Image (cartoon, rainbow, N blue to C red; front, side):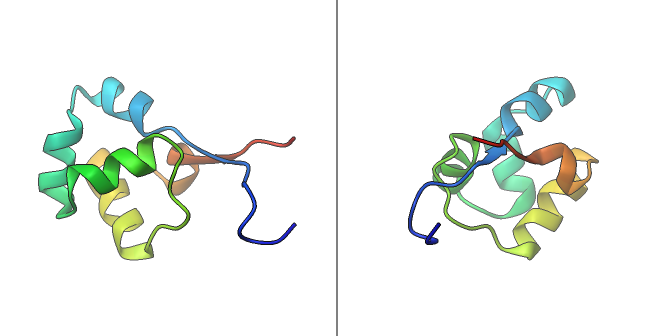
Length: 74
């Protein structure tokens, strides 16, 4: 499957935020990215994520990348 086609990676940012009692705005401020960019990630519309951003999200949510992302087989 070419990279421009849809992917099967699911983002669980909404669940992690709820579990930690944190808002998207608060996380954006802590991580240093815009709310819009986090919203794109949260709504499974992101095509990529920088490792520095992923690291910062994991640091602030006290989680592992596998807690945030999963592969959803077709």
